Length: 143
Image 1 (cartoon, helix red, strand yellow):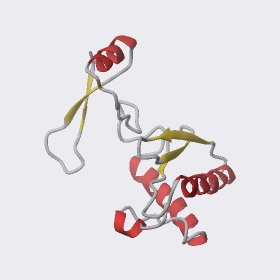
Image 2 (spheres, helix red, strand yellow):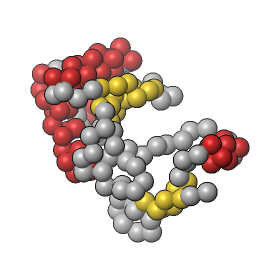
Image 3 (spheres, rainbow, N blue to C red):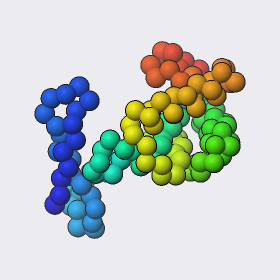
Image 4 (cartoon, one colour):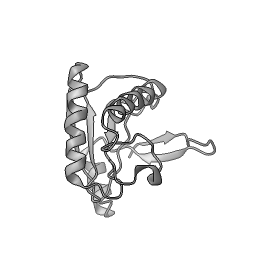
């Protein structure tokens, strides 16, 4: 079974992750009851260049799935205007949908900056619906 070494954000010893690239490794993970597999946003290697661009639509207090879907439609329209295809990524147990664009191959810093700029532009037009602040207290009542 292959593993991939991924550096920690704050430094320190890198973490070795299982690299699931075949049926046997997937079966091994399932046998361990690894029911929730977290995928990275990059190929391994290189980890500096995310493959999809993902927007995590995390509802704040008072917001629900309808608010998330409204935001997803707005975001899809903005990305479409930028000639980026947007696809629903899925729903987590908490009901938070994600929306991602097709492969783009940008660097982590540029990708993060681009996603923040897009979100901030939507926030300016729809301040009662969305906030691009990541801290939970700042997102109260908005997605």
